[in-house]
View 1 (cartoon, rainbow, N blue to C red):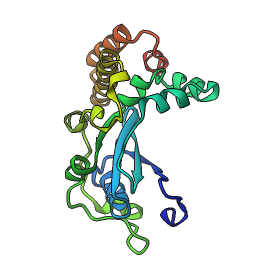
View 2: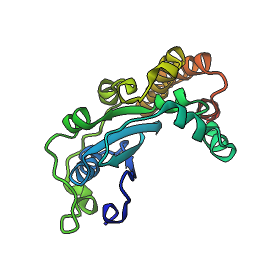
View 3: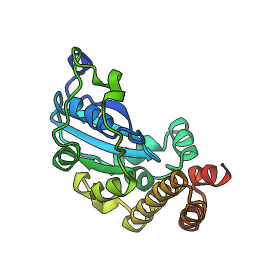
View 4: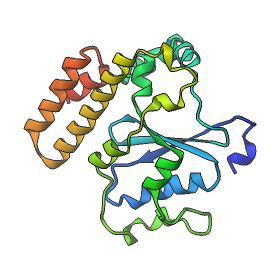
Length: 204
C-alpha cells in the first residue's frame, strides 16, 4: 500500500529491531520489503536498532547532497545528539544491501496481510541475530557512493570502528561482561571523544 502511493524515486524507511530473541522475525521484515522493492539496504544507527531503506532505484548516495542536508540546523542538532555529527559518521552505520543482504535473510518466510507472522512470534525458535554476525555482514558503503573522493576515508574508517565498538559494548552488556563493555566504550571515547551517543552510553 505504501509503494502504491510513492512517487518515482521515492524510498520507504522501516524500523527493523535486530535485538530480538527470535532472529527470524527481523529477517521476515526485510524479506517482505525485498518482495516489493528491487533494492533494500540495512543501516544500524543505534546499537541493534536497524533501519531498512527500500526503493526501486539502486542505492546511490551523493556525499555532497548528504553533507548539505545534514548541515541544516534542525537536522544537524538531532543527528549530532545521536552521535552522527558528520557524513562519515552517518555512512558508517551502513551494514549491507541487495545481494549480500538477501543472502543474510535467506529463505525465511515473508510477511503478508493474510500471514501476519510477527503476531505469532512465539511459534518461532529462540535464535537471536548476533553482533558478530552483523559485523561479518557489513560491507563497504563506498561501493554505493556516487563520488567517494570527497569522503574523508580516515574519518569513515574511525567511525566504523566506533560503530563496531558500540556493538561490542551492547553484546558485552547483554552477556553480563562489564569489563568488556567498559573496554569497548573506552575505545569509542578514545577514537571519538565528542560523540554524544557514546557519552550517553558511558553515563548510563
